[in-house]
Image 1 (tube, rainbow, N blue to C red):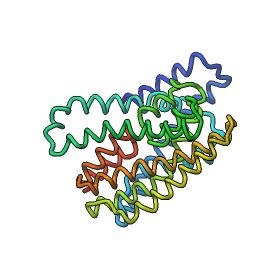
Image 2 (cartoon, one colour):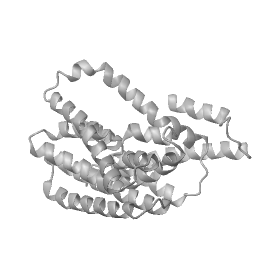
Image 3 (spheres, rainbow, N blue to C red):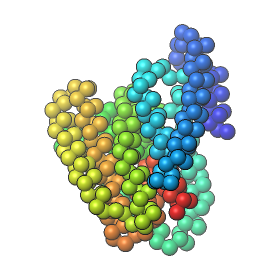
Image 4 (cartoon, rainbow, N blue to C red):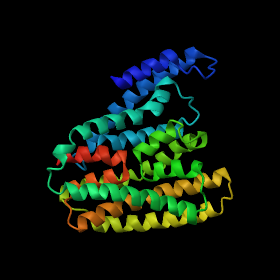
Length: 296
């Protein structure tokens, strides 16, 4: 209901600070975007149902891949009111709802066996993966600028809060422009994330033999990104290339290192998924964790 009202308000008020030469075209774009979003949701659901007998991948995985592909093909699309309102308010509204529900259930959460370990990693992991990534970018990549750090860490961790801050423009125009690029790149890595997690969920433990090659690939990408960033000398194209490499590499390292270490240490896989999604504030894992919880 809130999302619908946001779209309606965006169409009515459009943007009182912007000068739109053709308001009819702008509103028409918003309608097309609404139809496209519904179409993507229906198509992703059908694909998820089709492949479920082979491997149970969540609908959000296919929705992300289709959306990212559409973004590449329609890169010149001028955003209408629907996408503008979703980019501006979508993530913050979801976060507000999550915090509201989560806060109201906090007392019950402490009664769950093993929840203390989950919460400890959720807090400490958030500090480690976020600031370790920033330290690498600052001290090794030599790119200590908000235009690089904010969208890069939003993308590298699929961090829901930082993503909302970037796309809403709170961290500057350049960060808002670069954030969608950085966020989309790791989405293709979710092919490995969701497929391995789905197989691991059915098995009951992480499949270490599948994870090790991915960690090596993530480490190589991270090293490549440092080299690219050090040689960028402020060139926007080179910076974005290096940030894309780091976004992909650091995402793989953060996700699979966390899953492997916690599961091998003895934490059940269902609790691991909660701990990791919390530690990274990772919106993809959050949605997938709910999916796997109800599925298995």
